[in-house]
Image: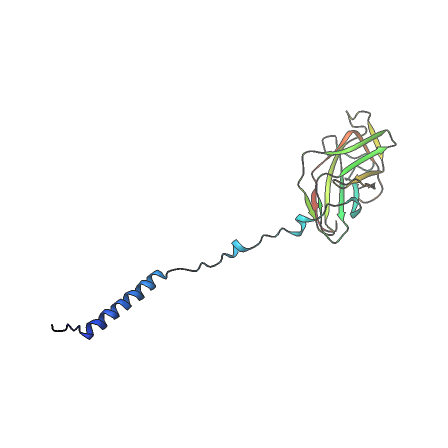
Length: 203
């Protein structure tokens, strides 16, 4: 029987074709893309230092209690509503930040019997106080002699104050708007306190 002989050229073409198909298959399968890392997804959010600051303590603050213009001599015109005004200020004495979270304590006593305390409404936002920064609280009270003031009155040249959530207090002298000694003459059960607000550094 005669032997069957395949042309060498045909085998070579078949081999080349298979090789080409294999290369195309591998190329087509190798379509994996590498995603570029998202910088925002991997970034770690860090809270500002003030957010983790310790609470402000009474002794770490410099306090002042000033009557507004016309309220230190007993002859002021008030604010048009029969009430007088004053301002309590606290300055952070340290170099690090502290958190002033809430209303400060304020009490004005005349001896051991009569007394008036400060009272605020709601829960004010916590304020971060960097070094030398100040917070102020505006006060409103009914002065002696005002119609309807009543007889529960206190006349005093100083007040006891405490930082929010602190138990140790300090005594602050009352001054007029120019920094001179004055007397706060208030009637009623409470002195209204506005929410604390930040003031300029070094105030």
